[in-house]
Length: 167
Image (cartoon, rainbow, N blue to C red; front, side, top):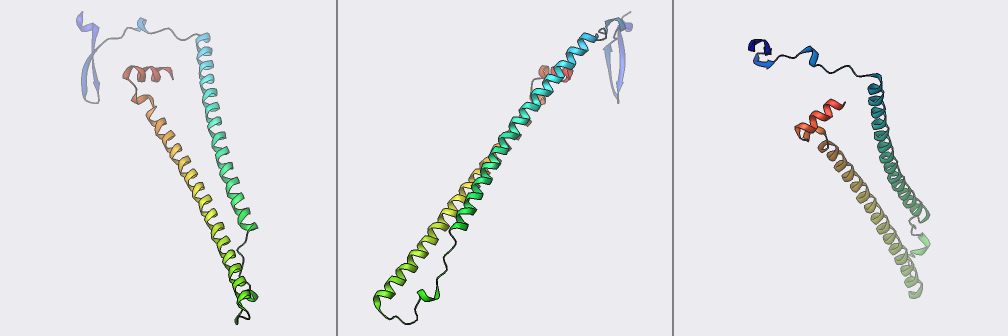
């Protein structure tokens, strides 16, 4: 009688004994109401997942639009303040008077200082854009890592079995 309760199993060379399963011990097939409820839960989970994904992408689109607008404003500022070219009549070959030479030199110096300040502002703006883009990439990488850590395989065996049985 005891031999009837146990059966010998061979799983690719791994041999073991297990209790025989009784056919009457199988759970009854799910009813239509259970199937409909399961389908409803599946649809609700799918809807929630899609809503989260939509919100995430909308936020990311807003960040990229902000970066694009900032870059556009930088380009407009640089096009509005083109680099002033020194004019030939401003650099006299022979100084006629010392006051005209001083004023021409001061004017040229002011133009050069304005160019340096404009270039400094552009460099600061581009640096800020790069920092923002790097922060976005770091955040995205952390989110990706978190999705890997949130996988049910890292959960307890009981939680893992429950997740596998639910789907």
